[in-house]
Length: 227
Image 1 (cartoon, rainbow, N blue to C red):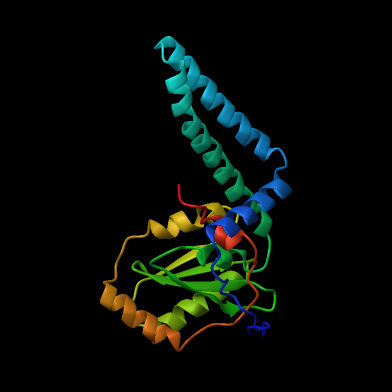
Image 2: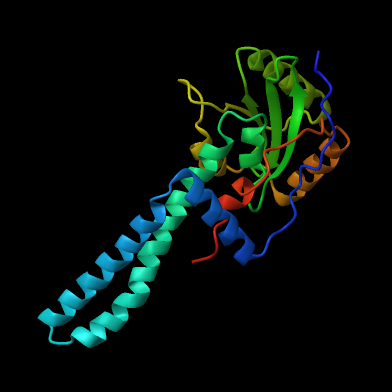
């Protein structure tokens, strides 16, 4: 029997790019204090290589100028990697971590967290997109029973719609949180846009349990400022 979970707001408000960067910087500084130094080192190396290349071609100043934006790009790329790693580390092991990752998918998928929850806080989240219905379970051994129950429920409410089950975690046969988004986006598209709208409309009435989702930079940590 699913336990009742306290209702909370699980849809984070949008942030500006500056706020996203500020949160990411704070998170990186907490989890990897030397990350900023590594990013600065990446910038310096890119600039030095550009100047050396310019010297060999007798245009050190010109290549030095070109190396500046290149160095910034290298530093920003490194910072993005550090930020993503820190973001996933910050929610690992938290209740609803998989839901937080699912809800950070930008377009094409709609996630309803905690559609089924056990007393041991095993849970199943539901994501709907062109591949059909994706059920993502996280927790202990009891999550498999929840998954079977939820799949039967989907067969009653939306018969004929493809249902994919994924288990999030670090064990064999499970999908790591870092690879969860990529795994879902790679699923073959089986529904047309009209079919997808109809499925979403039917499932809207089903809903799910409102539950606390890990807040902070995680949902937006994957949405780093556009390069």
